[in-house]
Each structure stands twice: as C-alpha cells, then as structure tokens.
Image 1 (tube, rainbow, N blue to C red):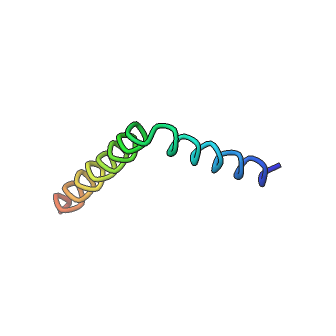
Image 2 (tube, rainbow, N blue to C red; image 1 turned 90 degrees about the horizontal axis):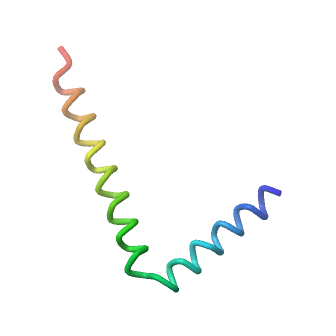
Length: 50
C-alpha cells in the first residue's frame, strides 16, 4: 500500500508540474523562502545563546 501511495503522489506531482508550471514554481519558491526564514531565525537564536 505504501508503494501505491508513493507512486500516486509522484504521479500527481508530475501532473501538477506539467499542467500548471507557474503555480508549481510559486509553491516551490514559497517553500524555499520559508525554509530560508526558518534557518535564519534558528541561526539568530543559536548565536544569541550565552
């Protein structure tokens, strides 16, 4: 069942990328921006520790 779920998710992702590439690019850009913000916050927190 896990294999079917993985392949189904990959198939949906491929379909989404092909059918709406602009929206998919925005999703990836937003996710990477969020990860960058989280990394910056974590770095600030760790550097402020005594």
